[in-house]
Amino acid sequence: MSMNKSDLVSTVAGATGQRQVDVAKTIDGVLATIKDALKQGTDVRLLGFGTFSVGHRAASQARNPRTGEPIQVPASKQARFKAGKALKAAIN
Image 1 (cartoon, rainbow, N blue to C red):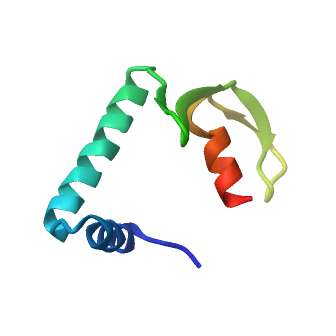
Image 2: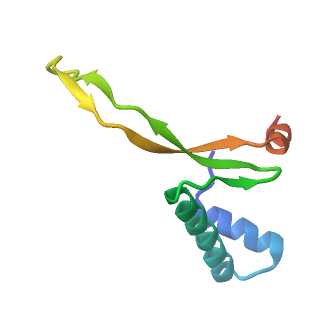
């Protein structure tokens, strides 16, 4: 089972007593702020929850599974999340 964005908005609205429209704007703002910080190379640390960061994947060589010919995979940046101690404890 998974929770999508509308489920999250409904749950937070029910827990806080706020309107779903206001909660959706707040969640959108938080996600946009995290995305902008990661674009700038800044980590986002939420104590008790976890850390969002940018990881770097080096260029590598792979093979096309159909033809077997080598393909150059370019270097890229990856969004990463590391759960904090309190979050790990809460789910275990």
